[in-house]
Image 1: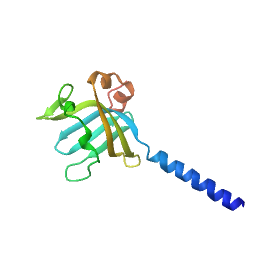
Image 2: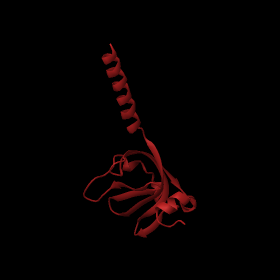
Image 3: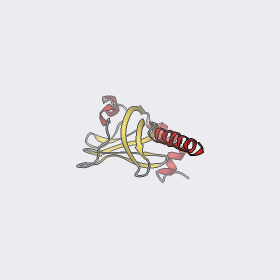
Image 4: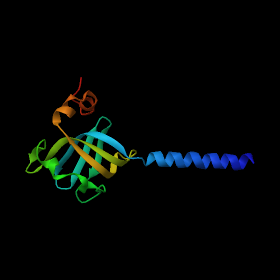
Length: 126
């Protein structure tokens, strides 16, 4: 009986751990698209790869509205550039990779510039 109980508890804990590992998370920081198909997000935890040209591309990259590229988009290379944003994502924490973008929210750059933890992660803080 104890063996069956231990197996049930173990299976329950494993399913809870698996569910929490897959739970979407909100990540806010500098969303960069410097060249075609190259995307990443720098947040307080570091750099997260979203897509690389000729390689990996996260599902849902198309959920970013056109407004992302208008007011607040900092152009650095033609239409390419960066902005402050929050993304709700699924991620592979071990490899620092965003595997799916569920939603995206554009933010003003002043919000990212005022985030001390983000600025430290970018090597700009005190």
